[in-house]
Image 1: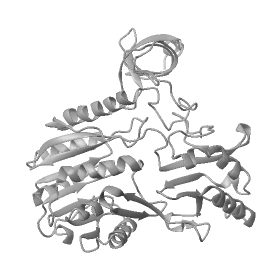
Image 2: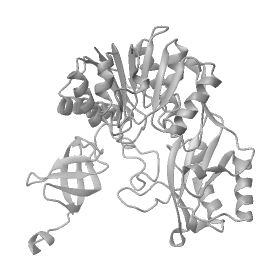
Image 3: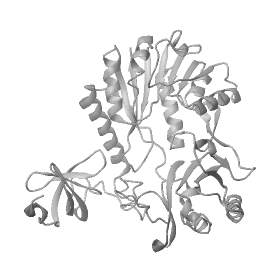
Image 4: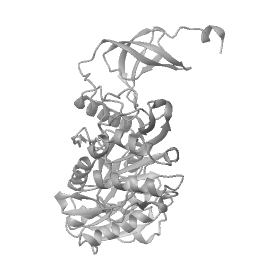
Length: 441
């Protein structure tokens, strides 16, 4: 780097913010036309910022002052917003957050997939605070910051944010961050606990402590007393997922219900379940409404998990072939189907959907409808086999617009029309975009 470039001033500079980037940072152009990204700014605002990083094609900055505020700007509810990396959009009006995510979805479909849906689905939404029932929180003993810290990482940094509470976590946990910090600070192994995994059910909450050393008897007693006082039930994880064990024998089972379908699903603390319970229930209902399964119709469900869609589909009278790549979730799907009296209607298979075989037993027979709920990587490897079965409708639930757009183009090339698409707001106040799309043959 030349001396001239190295010595260029850091500001402050003024910027007219033109748009939001996909990570929710505001973006505008400086006097030389170079793009500048500044977090916590909104389109239409004029702001003052300090330059924090120079790159070849863009600069990055830190907001110093909002000179002209957007009418969509609101006061963040959390006092830690801007430091904690858990949220990126608390300063944006909720309706505008949905509009931002919808724009991200539709732009990705058109730019990557070359597709425009025939209709845009209403956004699937739910409560915006105290919604997060699954989370992984960092833990670090930092005497210079007052002891043991529990929380999300700082924005743009590897350090754990100093938190007193969290507004997006379920209240049983979010309002007890400070208490958890004091609890862990009193353990003999306080420097050997790197994370807590939160898993909330309808009637119980589990906290999985990753422990690098075995807690002593005093530690166990302290944790047990806290569980019985608060209803937050500790599990210890000394190694891999197969080592997760409840601390107390009376630890309750985790479950959630989907009342519209009269099903109850049991899960383990480290199982995948959707982050937002209320939005999940509405997402399931919308997916089944879009599929319109008739009694006796055969539904192929891929990336099926522990039965989140499978059991409601079966309750509607469908015959479900549910395929999942994680053996533990397949076992839970079978158990949940039996417990809900749907064992004859749901057949759960364990298969690697990223290395599928055209002669797999679960692909035998006709398929009337299909439902996919893949991870961020999408479903590119399995889509040709799905399309070859010729289901008349496919519902695709996505957690990444770019891979949805790529896969939508694949389906379009195999004779399917993108009938509808819309946002599923599983992570309010973040830039994370989840979506649902309907394809018709």
